[in-house]
Amino acid sequence: MVHVDLDPIGGAPSVGFVVSRAVGNSVVRNRVKRRLRHLVRARLGLLPPGTRVVVRALPAAGSTPAAALGVDLDRALDRALDAPLGAGAGRAGR
Image (tube, rainbow, N blue to C red):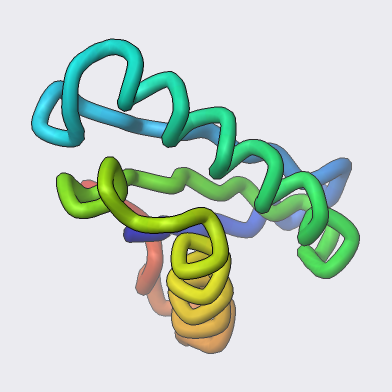
């Protein structure tokens, strides 16, 4: 799951990760975070300036191969960035 917010001032894109205990034990959670960081690092140049992204790993991420995580991440980013952000879509809790 990906949440995106655009800062009108701009700046470098920033990304945060949420990997709960539902994903697995600490070894599995840390592996998922490392994989996601690696995958997002390769995609930072594609994000518009001022983009703030939160990637929340779902429980299935603990047993998903890295290649499949990349496909899921691309799909989620495409969906989140195509949303009409000016209307508040893609903003968690607002």
